[in-house]
Length: 195
Image 1 (cartoon, rainbow, N blue to C red):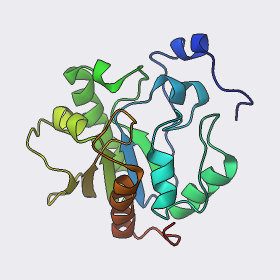
Image 2: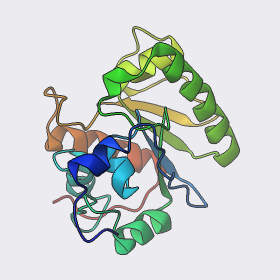
Image 3: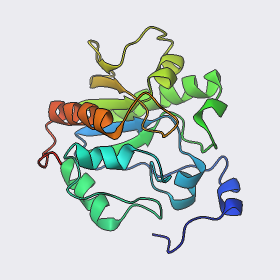
Image 4: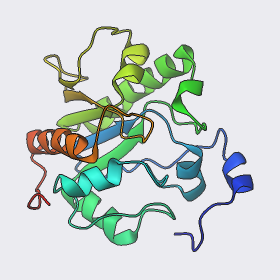
């Protein structure tokens, strides 16, 4: 973990970098973001940018016992908790950009194919993609609705859920937490009492 937050110059230098996936074994629930942001790439921790609602929603859902601050990197105790619970994190597109809307449809489609291979290899019971618009573009499914999908995804139960970015004004920490808890319950992840 870093001792300081990344500087503006460090963030700009992270354009195009990748972030390590979190893929414990066994893998029960795989959360899939759209792509890493620059802050995430700078600290090598998913959803690390302050203001992103992923970690607050995870805690509010009872998936993590404590509130996680990943802004300087994923704390070791949070990593252990996720790994013990069988929770993984990846992205549709592995390369960092300042904003997800910078991605091309070709990048999203290529990332979608790579995600298919990752899910086939690790076989999580549940895959939760966090970003319905990106999922629609990656897989050519323009009318797909938010929530649990009837068809599976490479043998895994598929949930397509809202993006936790602060730019998504349609969702709150509470609404995201409800979705995340439902996906975690479907995956058989042990949960803490809702906070």
